[in-house]
Image 1 (cartoon, helix red, strand yellow):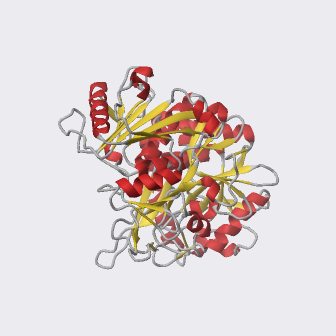
Image 2: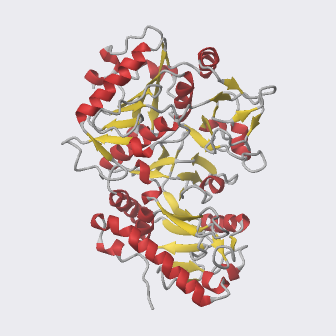
Image 3: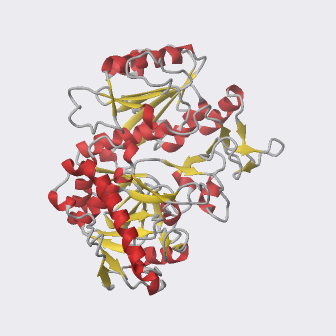
Length: 530
């Protein structure tokens, strides 16, 4: 590792800010970064440049004999020659050496000391250093004295483009991971989220290799019993909203691991969407965007520095990054016991899936690998049609192993620790898109509350004829007439046709994963009859 580390003195810039505190990083940002400002609530406002979101098509993994049989190659993990990685690495270091000042931030990934990785970030922007100060777990001053060699190094040279003539490059942006060197090289993008997800991607390799399940999910815990719950769901399914539960403690909002001891958060902070944010809708997030937080790509009033969260002139992907202890009911340290409940959230715009269902471990694997939700496409000539979205393990862009590896670990944990698995549809009910309505949030909250309380353990259910899972037919504070979706449609044949259509989408999507799962999991998917 020494050969590929900062200790090799490849970084020759004299002015290096090491592990600076937020106040100093504020000073550095205001002094050296044009366009940086401080909001009227005290957050640092920064602009990420041309790229205002991740560039998944520019992510590369070095194809090396020691790891090439571990990696799930394809549209998520594009292979890169080691020579190209080293070329980009040297290009990044050369760029950093031209900067008048750079920043080094050390921190941990993983709240469990037994499964913790030491991460070092080397960058040229104080905004990036503050962002990672928030997103990594912050060592104490004493721990920094003995931090030692990191397990992962991120060279963020995003202000300098990749050379498109370097073999394997398809644009001026490149985010390259070497599992052998344990390094990430970032070129051609200054979007801070690339660093956060680079850490998660590496954890998605290292943790399963050690027998620990890494998960793209939120997690909460019962403050009285220490029992936890994990909530999976793609954007728009309600994962963030439903994990903000005043009756429970927040373990984390995005990235976790499940070990033999329980669950732990990977991160030291939260990276929340800020578009259309109000104190009324998300009070915890709103109040966390204060001194020490980073506000990314937002528009603000130059006279009063008041942020207009409704303004999407720069991007709809406005974000706020803040330490998790800014959340009042966060559990510090961010660890908890084994989950009693695993909850898959989906927003089914087709109006087919039940609001609440129980899954077997095999069905859990199937739906975990599928990672389904559906959104409504834009209107063209007055016609709208739901569009199915599948993201394996509810985090496809960040996987390294085949999805079946993560699903098998999840299933084993579910069986070993007796967790109950639930599929909760926060989407359509009462008919096809345009005819039905979205399940009211109040009803969804009642379902989640009933899951946590154990009131649904013995509740009656009906087997869904197409998808095979047990549909809960009675739930406290939820009208029974909405729980069986076929009964809510005016035309039951129309429901059957739409259910078969959705089932076909599931079946066709799952074909790409069949080689990596058991026969029992394959059989746990939907069946089209008639």
